[in-house]
Image (cartoon, rainbow, N blue to C red):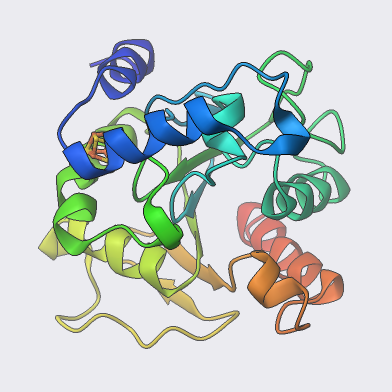
Length: 226
Ligand code: SF4
């Protein structure tokens, strides 16, 4: 399946009734700040360079972020952090990501998530994540040039682990999540772990911009073969 066909399949997915109802309700009620916006309200497909060498994996769209704009990590604070860091590291043509048609282009990077629908309290259930994992699997098989999986947070690490074939995993157990942890896979690819740039982590300085930049420095060294 091509990425375009996959995108269309994701956008029309109705597999998780709880999440679909939640996303549509948010799109109807809106946040006062965005009352004049037309919310996307549908599942959010991945976004980026089809020749990506890096696959960034987040948790799920934010209610008034990607669920509003229709593009991963676009329109919320986590996205501000992520796209700023990508720009500083030379992976994008602009620092900000405001809407699906703002001209942003990623180079060598594709961004996706474990769940494609905004969940209540940012917590998809295990069943919902398992149901959505088919799409991550398909993206990985389409994005053939990916050499590094950058997982944002523990749930993203677990979600990626679940879809990786057993023969490429370095062991049976899921590695314990640590910021900066590198997990080499048996096929030469690498999992790199970072704290998620959520407000919960950035406001409390669990994740700072220098820490996040360091992740991208590590990532670039890996791509440069250093
Ligand atoms: S979370 Fe994934 S599987 Fe569930 S409805 Fe949304 S797109 Fe479909």
